[in-house]
Amino acid sequence: MLVENNKAVLKFEGEVIFDNSNQLKEEAKQMLSKNEKVNSLVIDLGSVPYLDSSGVGVILSLFKFMRNRNGALAVAEANEKIKRVFDVTKLREIIPVYAGVEEAMQEDQV
Amino acid sequence: MQSSIVEKSFEMGCRAEEISSILEKIFSVLNNSAVAAEEIEFSLEIAAREMLANAIEHGCTLAADDSRDLEVLKIKLELKVSREKVVLKVKDPGPGFDWKNCDLETMPKFEEKGRGLKMINQVSDQIKFNSAGNKITAVFKL
Image 1 (cartoon, one colour):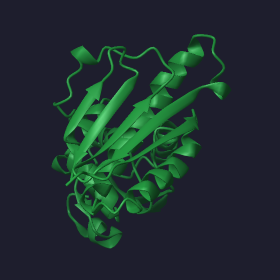
Image 2: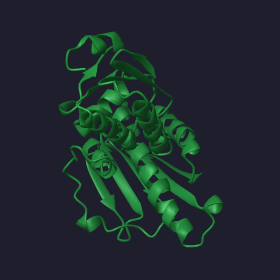
Image 3: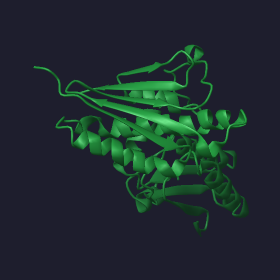
Image 4: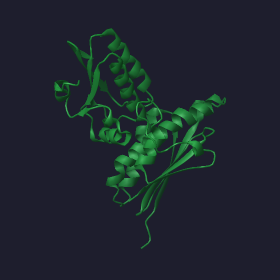
């Protein structure tokens, strides 16, 4: 996780699926707990070939974690398959999805 | 004109690591079938992955709880491709579940779980279960 002031970018690597989603979620929460000042988190999915329904659960869990500290969360760099998963699960109604990390970092709500 | 039909059966262990190679086999059959199925590829992959995830996470786990060795348990897949539709069936070694009382329509909003079957239902044209609930069929019209 890259942290700069109160902003952080968390880069996931590889598939985020039922087999590893719980571990990823717990590791992410541990990192965020060690960085209490972070109130703006971007999840970088640029190195994630696929994310299933449990991966959507990870993103929502981290969204709620950030909301509990009055922070915000956005997602960036999702490929076309993952965007389709976001459409099907209506995740975009809750969480902003940006094309690039830079763009996500510049937005006020993140 | 009669539809050309391709039917293939596959088998895999209860391991997430085997999902990628099974997907490769499914798409290899599809791409060699002379059927134009590009439009359903994303939908089929989403459904297949959720069907296999459920089979491993629930079916295999429950079967293993029943004193059966996880290493020898198998998930069975059937793929049928015709000019009109693609049909994928996944049967797990578990006892099944109460699908008759399962809401397949309402997508959870903030909950972390409970999206898999609803995703399969949404990306396919029809889903069916056997009476026990350990075999799911997803139909994709072409």
